[in-house]
Length: 340
Ligand SMILES: Cc1ncc(COP(=O)(O)O)c(C=O)c1O
Image (tube, rainbow, N blue to C red):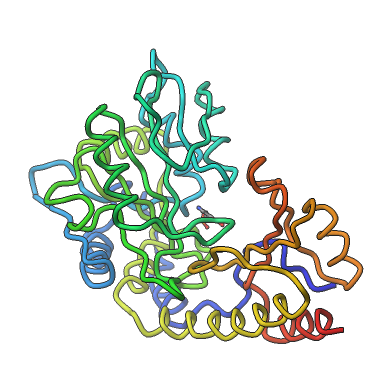
């Protein structure tokens, strides 16, 4: 079996992270929810260097960024941490989406509405989730699309949160952060961005994520997290600082994924499937213009496991998702089987 159904990294965690983790193994005290100064500095520098995003750290003001225990818990808990229960009871999320946005809404007692464009009005809406590059389809929102959401959120006083955990993995386009000045302007009011080391640094087992943006919103999340004990372990904070300081390992891993993507995409197309979007991220979003379970069945017959698009929302029902997070040997095996 070649399992391409799950997006879990399989390559070695780079030495730069492992060494920093080991070097910080002596950790008798509680870690800080705010993040160590070294981590905060490294994360702010990474945002500036890689994404052209400037966050305003001020010694007396609220924090513009905090570390999270990977990004999944933050995605699932954000509506709860922001205390969104009240008269606005709906969270907007993409038509085809990572399931945890819905989990987080339901956990907070909120409803969901799937939409890729801003609703006509903001009545009843408490939060918007964007995901660019998107899982499962690798779609990247254009600057215009991002600006439209930002303007809509601000005009209705509704926070817009962009999950950007694949932002370093653009292939045909360069994904832009919602916090970039070309999108957000000079201030991040009402905006949050979510990043993760899991994919870019091959460190999903470390659980290192980052929340940044509007300091008033970040502060609210941080203050609740302190009281919940949602703390990134100190050795992981050290590894995160080292990871944010080093671009070489991110670039090297990216090239590994690029090569796997090129090989698999060619074989998927030669096998008669159409690939849509997938201009960034770690998945091929493929269709044979048939029900996804028929495609899943066909691939299973070749010994390849893919994820059915219907897992990500009704609009995904005619697609399957193939992950690039497999070893070269497994990708080559999939290519061989597709070429049959
Ligand atoms: C869109 C999206 N957001 C968040 C996550 C969570 O990643 P992590 O918790 O490892 O940071 C994933 C994981 O696959 C994802 O695809």
